[in-house]
Image (cartoon, rainbow over all chains, first blue to last red; front, side, top):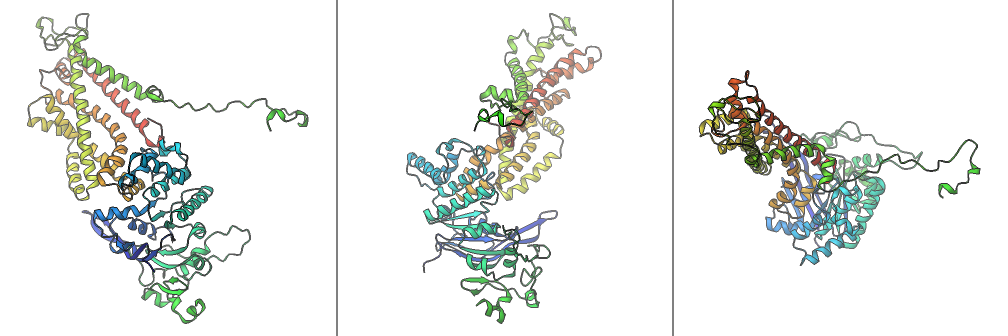
Length: 332
Length: 307
């Protein structure tokens, strides 16, 4: 089997908390604490979890918008995390991003034409100015926006149209992987569906891999191949879509899924209501990070941190319950 | 189906169909071009027009019925305003009208130069401290130190180090005004750096200098322009204060502050000597502030009005 497009190995990102008189470091936010996963070519991996679990930080680390604390980000066999500026530029072209907020993700003072031309010029993709123009026009066609919109500025567009411009900008660099950081969360339902379908079409058309960061499980179920569930800076479960949505292994995944509204009146629901709040990532709990809220907690959870283990067909779960004989018997 | 095609026979008695709906909402008229911009922002128009008048007065001072503003006429001292001396004459017999008009040159030169120089210097320092983390601490503590000294005292102290000349007045006030611009630019740069479009530009391979030129600077200019007008107004006031207390423009050059300082002793008996320069100063500062307020409203990106 060939090397996966993207490999993230034991990624850690700790942010210092500064306070006090001379900005002394008073703590560390363990935003991402040992996350590993792979993304194959043309695959969609969804990273889900509640706010503050570190899923956006993972996306930004892959884009190398900051230096990571530890671990490796490997794109097509080459490390991005310690690449030289020249090497990084080459890698940058292959990983692009679509952000959540369609209003702040486009420079209000630039015309759409210049927004789309920026990556093409930066990476020297166009051979001539005519080629550049042709590429920009083609991008507008790809994201199904009218060509005469090229001379307008972002404030003249609706949220959905702006998001299309954002996608066109990501495509301009001809990437292999697009990080969609909550790319449809700010849009209303009908526009959301259009953008999701557009992303799926583009994935087929260009063989793109998508890292789809979202908290919206309905959208994730609609478009993903695999799902990684994050809780407090760690992946607690990673499995193909089918397993996650039909046979979740981790108690947290079960709780998340039970919270998804069912659009059917009178449907029987037994939501698992988690008690308490997410603990602070400055002082994460010892042992399993979910032990403060887990309905099935037992002594071992507080003492020993569970590792991601293969629990079923390509299903990885970080839970001590999975290693109990009866649990593994029922899972296997 | 149109309204007219509904048969009135089907309606219950007592009900009629309105022939035409009234236009409740006036269509929004979008104005274009410079005149349209000025009409939708009257404060900019008024402030700009006043300021333009004053600039023209300063430029064409020699042709506006003035005499040599430094010419002495001891026989005609402290005359009240008349056909000969429109604004009266001072205790050395100099024509106050001429002195006030020529004084506009000093005020406007100082105001505009300080606004430009302080903005450029503040922009440079603000960009560096917004982008270079290790320099930020050092620069900002230095700026904090400068800000702890009242600008007028700082300017007086700097003037005490040098000879009185217009150039030195400009430099002294510029140094005193730089911290305000620096603070503003730094805060704008820090908030712009966190914008997703800057992250997207980084991800699409734009190098830091281009990030600054293409994404940071254009979005910094509007607040800076507004700040520059306030600095211009405040610089003209500080110049007058410096001249008034004798630490500014040398007495040989007529400036509004100088004229007021010289007329101060005679304030109770000959109030017009002080009145005319102070009226001109007030109107000029008002014009600049109106322009600044208008620009602040017009350039607010949230209002999405096209410029």
